[in-house]
Length: 291
Image (tube, rainbow, N blue to C red; front, side, top):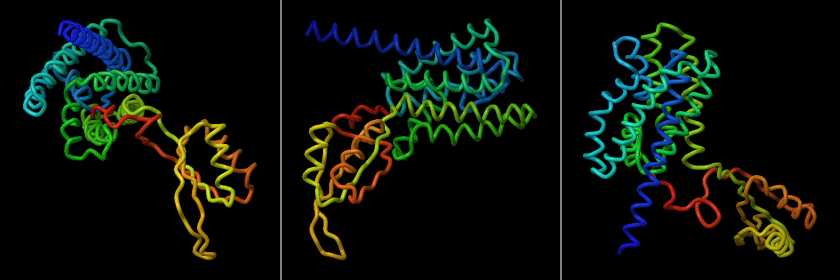
């Protein structure tokens, strides 16, 4: 029992330490890159940046105030345990945004601000998500939507909502350049966020139809050490049964499979296509994704 409590305590310390670091990264992206270059990259961050130009309040403070009703939604949908970690994340993010604003802009080049700011925001949000919390705002709304439409990725949902807020920024700023740079920031955030959350587990799905399927299979198992599934098939013209080799390999190992097939049977019929999400041994766990 004692060891369990110690283990749980250690887990919580690591979790909140990770959330703290993630929120600092998030705050850096906003205060050092996004806000100084007058961009509104969607979400409550974008709304806070827009309102900070109108109200006599700091961006971080507005961000915190916007999140109050969303925290109530989080408690209702996910319980106090989730809400506490999220409230902590929002508090640290608020402090990070306001304190780093003192440092001024890391760059005054808008394109650099959009790319690096968007990337830092994505890394921050992604790390917070991976620790069973959110940075509030759109994150909680997206988490609720994911329960209803789980086939849509987090980055995709955020992209849709962010697009609406970016359009609003165009009306407020009255500057098309700010809108366009905001779009770049949003696209960068969406792309990097999916990498942080889901990983670059892109692989190749390969089918091989050959009269020398046994020789090819033996070499692939021995030389490449990958999992192979043999499917039964028959050609419609000759009505001859054949074994179809099916395998999934990492992108960087696909050429090894091609070489084996070419050496064993140059006339083999081979189909190679992309597989963007793979679950199972050697790839992503069914239970590893928290969203």
